[in-house]
Length: 509
Image (tube, rainbow, N blue to C red; front, side, top):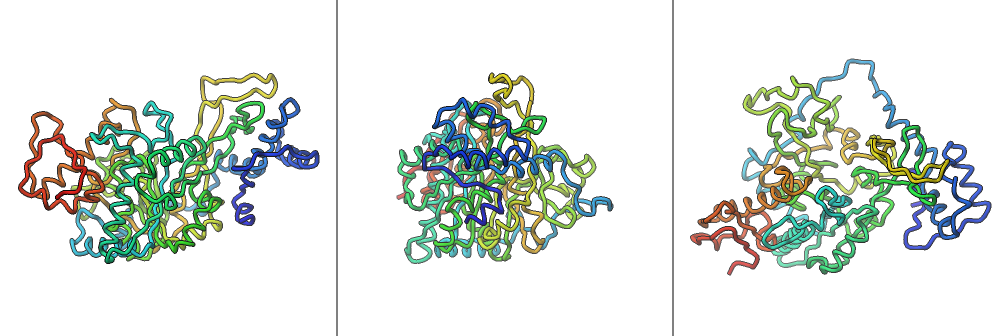
């Protein structure tokens, strides 16, 4: 592990043990390292600190390699030219048919085959679930982890509870298929510094929503120092560096520097589903997706939804220079965005919208130390409060004064050979409804999240043969994940009349 941390440029974590004041020689060695990197301003107030403050600052600074921070900052601000950059860049192309499939037009027998094989893998305890849950609900008017947010369903369930119950239901379906043998899908929950404690407390208070505590592993993504516009590491206070989470791409390093990879290896996990906490419709460990990816023997697969129109602001998964990649909407010209598919003139040529919903093979994640340190960092220009190292006063800037460095989870895609990458198009109304904005925004907010779950439940009930009536405009049905994972098991609704809004919370008798 020490070798891995060295390759990934990660220092020792002091979490769990109170830091000790360094010896004079330890302090001198660290100061020398920062001075060589021209970042020794971080020690400006060291001599004025109390002993615990000195110990804490020393521990924090020891976790960073200042030369590496300089290197990634420079590369992020001045991205290196790609190989063969002087040659004419190959045109963007959709992924080839060999690497894609679509729920919208796949043969029913293929979908059934993938579902059954995925459920078999779950029953064999070969599937793990990886949740990216580092975000706070700041835009939603809450400082709590976003997963704790109640989107306004009649049941008042949070995003965490909805997803936990989908895992429970899927484990039951898999166990039943395997003759009631116990099926376990461990849930690996990646938090950030501000959300780890509240997330752990929330899970404990809610008794892990019926999951076994030992099968829920909460871990933390890394952080990187915030950098001033002139390249200096900023201090948040006289005894602490200003830091920010390292982006959703930090998941790769976090898997290795936590105990997660060891836990997966010990359990024999071979297939991993990764997703973001803010999607209320996410089909956690979707057997169809797992079966699809496993049948193709790929290292990464991704779910996409069809782009609504040429101007929708979404990143697209496509082929760039012969490699799978994600290209942001701002990088695509109008002509390319509006191009139509040659075989289907009524749909866009480039329509595979990225929803950060991925499959990984365990064998690929085991290779993280070989490539994680090579992934690029991206610049986010922000207003970052800091302590002026000359005056010692705290400054709250009114305009962006620095940068936060982050990695994106999809930056790994171009590393793969095309034969090891696959893409599955799914129905937006069934699988994608992100929570991004405050209530009342009208788009990607708590109201649209609630609406999309209730509309889905109504569709399921009607497909099962129920009649849904309502005296008002709210005609949706909330179907508990413990009753149905994806619309199955609702046969007893046939012939029934349901007055909406309604909640189906208990097993149908």
